[in-house]
Amino acid sequence: MAINPSIITRDLDKIADQTGNIYTSLHVVGQRAKQISNSLKEELNTKLSEFASTVDNLEEVFENKEQIEISKFYERMPKPSTLAMEEFLEGKVYHRLPEEEVGE
Image (cartoon, rainbow, N blue to C red; front, top):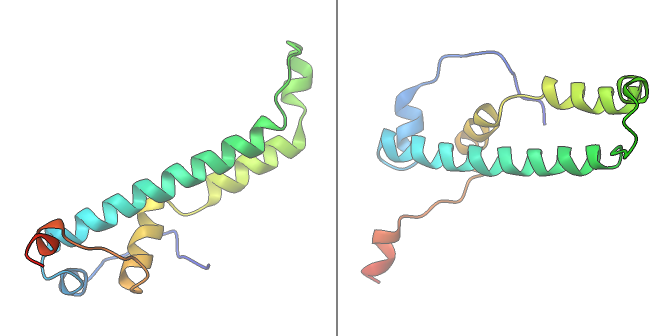
């Protein structure tokens, strides 16, 4: 997925059109961003746990190039909020309001 990581101006009407309310839309994007963040954190921790060592030798810790490259890869990724907004605007985020289900 090629996402532009730079800051860009968003059309608030386009964001609000998805739910009919800008605040609801931003809440949905925020919730999706939390999901993405948790998923990425779990994925990174899993990959880094492979390098966990019981040795307290600092030289070994600082020289692990693979671990450094994995960390740099995740640092260069777009922020979860940017990914969530892109998914939302592309219609890839499923959302529903609990109030709507009560009346059914």
